[in-house]
Image 1: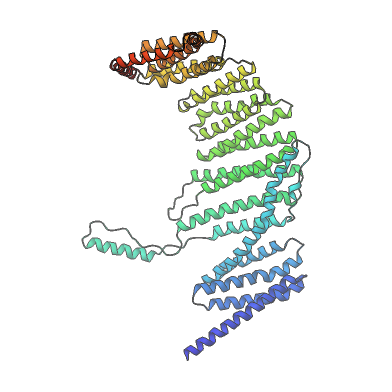
Image 2: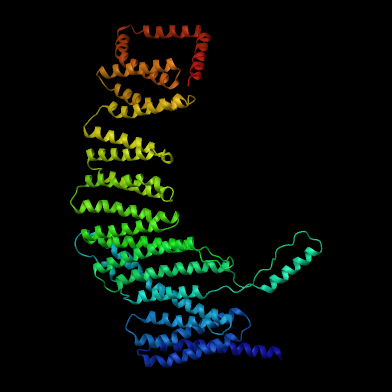
Length: 624
């Protein structure tokens, strides 16, 4: 008998589901096809009835999964029931916001006295509609973000390029984004963790007390786990909801600049205001966290670092959009960069955390760099003049670097300033004299930076910049002598090697003197073999002989080896013509005979020559 009843119930349930699905589909079709609000009332009533039947059926299920599934369907019907009539009454393009508002109303049923499975299904149905509205508004946000970049095609033309603002969504997209942001904030506020199970904790403590009385020396701590959601699981959800709400609110503000057909000045002011507001918002949570530590460890406040980071990133995005919009005219560019510079400086000064100051401080350096380019360019200054003026930025960052070290953002600020110096070098690349001047000034700045104990490594960059400045200056003077390019490197390198050897005598001469000597000897030796004049071989041979004697006198392996090799090759180059002429004048049998005699002499004194070679190897090995 029970089997028959179970079969009848299953058949009836399947038939009810099929009939209900067909009726629900017909009601959805009629609601969507209704052209006026009165015509959508009838399908709406059917959808409400279907939702009521679905919720009633879901409440009768003992298992959670079928109840949640039926609640999702019922929630969708509750969304579509009023949305059809409201969409028909509203202007074209507002159908999605109408469905979204109805979904928010369905979400409010979370606070109704319903079973948990039904509330979860209704919330899931509302969440699907909200996600769909966000996907629908996403093209408007992307268009609003990419539209300012079109101004790059008409820099300082006096007109605003608005080709990217034709989104077609109108004001409905910002409304959807703002509504979902408000829902996230409300969900964060109303999502509270339940109280822990005190009875379980009390019983566990009593058990530990009995254990201690029975002979245990140290009672164990209560190990009962509170049921439900704990504060540790609520905390990430609250942080994520607040950060997502902030992103959606910023997206709504950004899309609104493109949706309401604002003028150029109004759109520029909106982006600048948005950037400044987000910079202020980035500093407020961190300052609150520094001034008000959470007193309750069971219910800690949500971490404010994520919110501050999100606000800072969004502020940078708005600042970029504002900078692009400001490229329409010269005054707008300079004014925008000046305001953003002041905003970033204020944010870096107000922020209480060292790590939080890095991005605003670097943003201020970037704005200062752009302002150093925009102001002279608006006055008609040439590129090489702008390049020299740009070096003010790395000079300023290097000057205040030691003060910023205690505050945190010293290294990022100085690296950003170095990027400004690299931009200056690139701007002066087409003019050799000004490029040499720019490199020399950059080398001076790097040398001054290397005087600080924590920036000793910059000395290598300073040496490279000064050498490059010297080489570019010589190339501008059409100097073709290789020694003019190598001696400015050799002399400082030998001085540094001498000071290093005096401070640490165990340093090898190859490390101290090898690079400096090779820098001049090897290029000069290569030129000697193709130079028909006699002055260069004479000077190079004399210098190499002096280096050889210096190495032999002080027992230095590198000068002795490099100098002797250079003297030998220079001598071979000078004697080669005479040897060739002598060999040509002698009988043809004499050179082979002399070679044979030489081999006989070497063979007869092989042991002695081998001892001399070993003695020479040991002598060189004992040298530094």
